[in-house]
Length: 316
Ligand SMILES: NC(=O)c1ccc[n+]([C@@H]2O[C@H](COP(=O)([O-])OP(=O)(O)OC[C@H]3O[C@@H](n4cnc5c(N)ncnc54)[C@H](OP(=O)(O)O)[C@@H]3O)[C@@H](O)[C@H]2O)c1
Image (cartoon, rainbow, N blue to C red; front, side):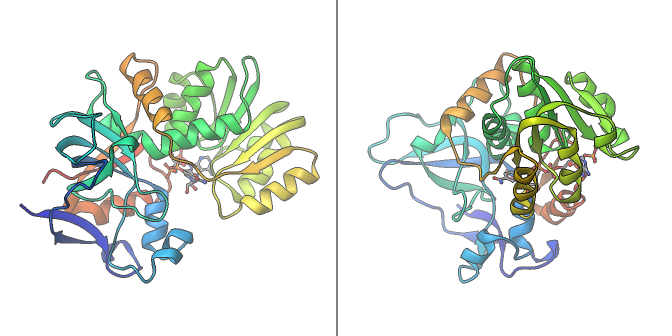
């Protein structure tokens, strides 16, 4: 049996992405072999493919390298000393983050401790949409300790991280303001947020006295959003590239500001899968690309305008 994987043989444009056949991996002690159904695509995948950021720097001598951190699929083999899963169980995970990757594979061995069981009511597609983006959303909201009744501003509520963050903040009974283009106004209103069209006017002209800012855009957009905050507000800025600049400016203005790097947590994925299973959280899937169309998937990711998540169907 062959194991097709999507690799970057060299850094560059989306067209560098290629499919290679590898030997079928064998699970070591404590690992299970997962047949991947869907792999999530995240902005970091496109950045690493382009040779940008620390995952690229750390793997420059490791090419060809297999991208991908989000998987859903089923267990097809259990290694020694495993007892959490049986063959056929449906699982999802945030795997190999940040330096190992490997999610864009048809088969992958994973320590069983890193995998969550997918409840029967949750689809494999929804489960693949949650790991990296969902955990980023949870951890970003934790950083600003969103409380009931607070006014929270989330920039880019329609994206992979944003659409989960908006729903979790609404569920926490915060009053949620979020920015998006005109095309996403209705979508975000249905999630329970005050949706603000950033194409119409800067957010600083539309929101005031916010207790917390979750920045998923960075740069000048985030700097403008600092004008929406009340004294002593908390700020988390998630895009790593501009985090230092934004934190510096925010602290000068007296805000409690921090950047972040998402930290994989099985418990958080378990919690989100449960919320999806009882209908309290909904994943938005923009498009599922067959693995052969990974170039198009990365081109779409790089538009920066995807609503929700992009997945790769690895079952071809
Ligand atoms: N530090 C970490 O650990 C970590 C973890 C995950 C993600 N990130 C970073 O966090 C950012 C968000 O990630 P993501 O996965 O949510 O990205 P994404 O899914 O690609 O975000 C796309 C969304 O951004 C919105 N958008 C684009 N420009 C905007 C603007 N000026 N104002 C408001 N919304 C805008 C788009 O909505 P419209 O079409 O409506 O404009 C689109 O829905 C990325 O920079 C990513 O690299 C960092």
